[in-house]
Image 1 (cartoon, rainbow, N blue to C red):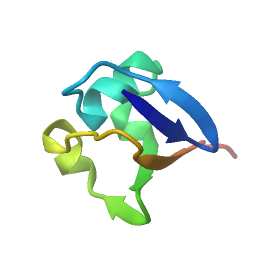
Image 2 (spheres, rainbow, N blue to C red):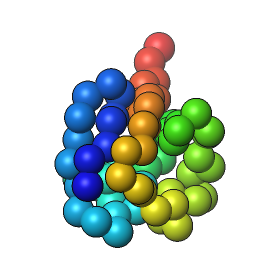
Image 3 (cartoon, one colour):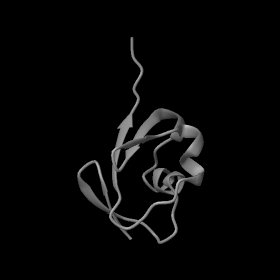
Image 4 (cartoon, one colour):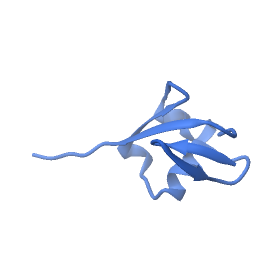
Length: 66
């Protein structure tokens, strides 16, 4: 299925979850914040959040520093 991730087209298999997308993108769930179709997704819900054709996701990576 086709998604838009941070403004770029992305393809992932049908029935995928948000957790599966993050894994495919090599992103650690504990280090990101995700908005799906304008709604913030709680980290605890990543594994249960199904993705659908045409979803628009914004993924922000959290970076520490000092």
